[in-house]
Image (cartoon, rainbow, N blue to C red):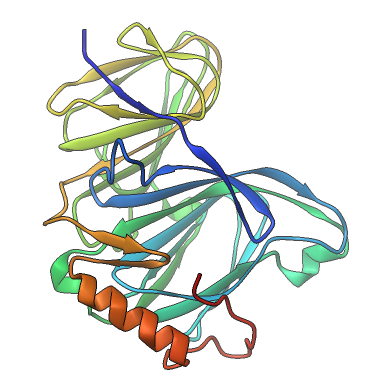
Length: 286
């Protein structure tokens, strides 16, 4: 019987939005390129309130925001200004320096709104760490889907299950949303070296071992595994190729060289950083 590493997430609060964060963890620093995993818990905001993550910096990573419910407004120092809805991908590659904000759109503040989704960070390969920034938005209907015999898979980013997403990833990646009806099964292939499964809702067995919802289960390399839904289930599968060397993470910065992080901290503190047009507020260094 295979052995799984189970990571129970820690509860955090990001500018008023409750989250669960299984990555990074002392048990596991990354799964493929994924170095950070935030589950934004379903939250009902009353009229006049919403998520508001003020202007903050990044280096050496790509952020991917994917919502199940609600809307977010993304703005960044490249000049991007995009509203993001359920099933859509908001993809931002930081390169050497980028800043962005994410907030509930003003059109929803008056009536109140619900927010539920995921944000992950993918470490950039060394050759792209100090490259140019990039933003792209991908509609729900642009993401490939398989829907067969009660199992629905949407490929959010990368490749897997004979699907390929249009999101411009920088290294081999697997990021799939999986929805399974009761009593269905799914074979998780060993097509990526590193993989992990996060069950958002429902009861499931992995190789006859029960999975605890809201925990990240790191899968053994090189083994195809069978997932069985004991009830209607909702999960995501992440993974990809191993990183091209260890990464250092400090606040919102990811780098293979600690000197790059120190330079970024100094620049942000000094105000020597690209800014988001029309935005004055910012999050200071912790």
